[in-house]
Image (cartoon, rainbow, N blue to C red; front, side, top):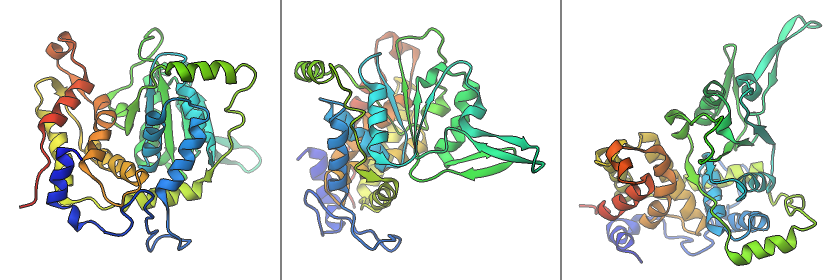
Length: 350
C-alpha cells in the first residue's frame, strides 16, 4: 500500500460501500438497469483484455488503459512512431465489441461533411435527406488524424464533447457507447496539421504503444507469417453490455478527500512554473472518470489514490503546454505531471 493510499484509508475509505470489495467485485446495476442483473465490470474487462491481447501482444498496460477510457466513456489518442501497432490496437478494440464500427482515413482532402454527414436533395420527395457520415458509429477509428486540415479536425469537436452532430441547424444524437480512437505519428511532421488544444483536450487519455519486448516480437514473427490474428478476432461483448458497464462505473464511490485530491492535482498544473497552459476543468472530470474505470477493472467498488495516480500522466500530460524555458531545458509534460504527483498530498477529512 502506498503512502497516499494509506492516507485515504484513514480519511474516508470507511465511508465506501462494503460489499464486493475484493477482486472481481460485482456492481449493482441500479434502478436504471433495464435487465435487473448485476454487472461484473472486472470479469467483463478481463474478457475484453484477453481478446485484444491476442492481437496486441506484450502490451497489457496499454490494453488496460484503452479499456479504462472505453468504460469512462471517453476518447483515446494513440501517439507513436510508425509500425508499432497503433491502428491494430484501435481495430482490435473495435472488433472485440459487437457494435457499429467505422474507420476514417484522415487525408488532406477529407471534408467535414465526410465525417459528420450531409443533407442531400432528393428529387423524388422534393426534400433534403440527411446522409449520416462516418462518425455515426459506436467506435470511430480516426487513423492519422493529424493529416487532415484543421477545418476537418474541427468536425469532431461537437460529437466528441456532446455526442451529437448538428447539420443545417438539425441536431442528431449519436449512439451510446460512442468512442473516438485516433492515431497519429508525432515524428513525421511533413504534410500534417498539429491538433489544436481544443481537440487534444477532448481526448480523455493519450497512450504510446512503445516497442514490443523481445519475446513478443519473436512470437509475432512466428504467428503472423501466414495469418493475421485480427481477422480471427470475434466480439466478446456488445454495445448494450458496454453501456451497462459504463453506467456501473459511473456509480463507483469516490470519497470526498479523493475528489479534493483530483482538484488539487489539476490546480497544481496551473501554478507550475514549467507550464504556460495547465489542465482544464474538463481534465479533472475525465481524470476522475478514468480513475473510476481503473478501480472497477481492478474489481473494487471504490476509488483509491493509486487509481488517480495511475491515470494522471495519460489523462493530463497531452493537455499541457511547456514554457519556452522548460522546453529548452528538455523537460516534458509527462515528467512535470510525475513531479506534481510526488508533491501534491492526499487531503484528509477534518
